[in-house]
Amino acid sequence: MPIGTGPQGGTVVWGAASVRYLDPDQLELTFTIKPPAGAPSLSRVLVDLHDADDGFAASTTSGHPVFLPDEEQFQNQRCVWRLEARDRDGRSAIAERTIVPTKGQP
Image (cartoon, rainbow, N blue to C red; front, side, top):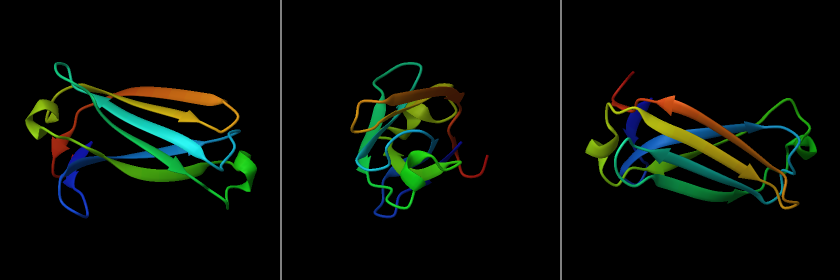
């Protein structure tokens, strides 16, 4: 997974979510990336996806950056990438993957 530079500077890894059967209004997404050693970095966002067919569309996608405060702690390391999605009614979904963030193109 490429490490990039955010639109206002800073080192980021982009996260995206594709969800079904969750209410698209006031959807809370929490992207977390945890290195093998050290503190995890996370990005919590509240999104309204008004054009998402009430959450029953084949997929609803939203992307957000997760800032890496210390790039060296994450670069070329096997990290756990986690997404938690929770709607305003309390329904939730969680997904985890192992990723290796790299500088530039993968």
